[in-house]
Image 1 (cartoon, rainbow, N blue to C red):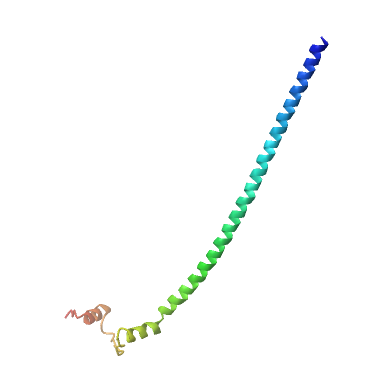
Image 2: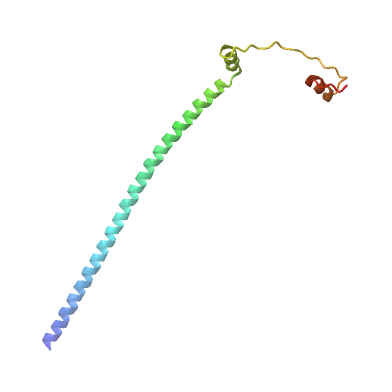
Length: 121
């Protein structure tokens, strides 16, 4: 009977040790997974911060280029430049200015007909 009791005690101790090993292994596994996830988060955040910084740099560069192109466009649209290009490259000359005096005796429809060559009379 002493042998059976010591065997039961021995089995119970071995089972407790096995349970403790499983618990320790589970805790170690959970700690490893938590550590991995934490490191992965830091790496992901670092990559996002770098990409954000690069995108901000690109955005500023595009804003600067847009400002330069807008200024260039304003220069190209200026009346002085258009007049210069028309005279130098297209050999166009400015027509003399004509003053047209309108009397009040004609309506706007009659004036339009006179200008367009469709006289109502």
